[in-house]
Image (cartoon, rainbow, N blue to C red):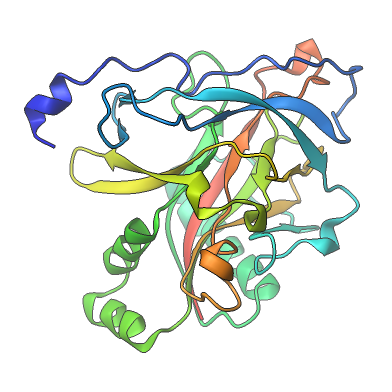
Length: 304
């Protein structure tokens, strides 16, 4: 796409990252818990201009909107042992407190928090040889937040973008060696609440086995210095969504975005290789708690 085309693209649609209003209310609880009827914003059948979907990341300009759809999101609290990265493609981990509390200094996060993430992954994900952390995002809600919770169903990387990540974040010779040898590589997002328990805007994850390849759509991500791609997720009956109610600061959720292993980790059509996820409105959120969710996600190349 030329620069001219980008400047002539339609203005961003307000529903792209909008907060949906659930159609069914529930009695207020603190923190909200239990299975919940709500809505999730899904990828549309077509784009506004008929071109392949894209997002200009710097100003959130895109050629598509999202479509809110009612869903029931099931509570996995108490069922943690039933979930793992090779089955649903996400995995709750209990009792992993952090010495970092503020998450306001990026250098300190990299220096002190990154080693904690590496230790968590090596303890809870079998077979790891190496962990390469390539970035993190701190999300805080509110009208002036630069990185608020993402209120749309998506997967962080497409397959081509995942291979770009391997080549971008490993030394060139090592990257080609890993790819040529067929060494298992996963991209895992380690998600933790800050100032939990999570009351507002909890994170929902779809059981990847229930999401067909026809449900996911590549979305170009255009940055000032490069281009990548994510996957938008379309609604389909039969998808099953889960959340971990009242997540506390000493709990993390491992979210798998990519897996080169198509037998164990990918399964039929790679459906265990990636986790659709989205923040959502829990109708049981007390009014005084709305807009208060904070979290950090750390994205990692996991080799082996």
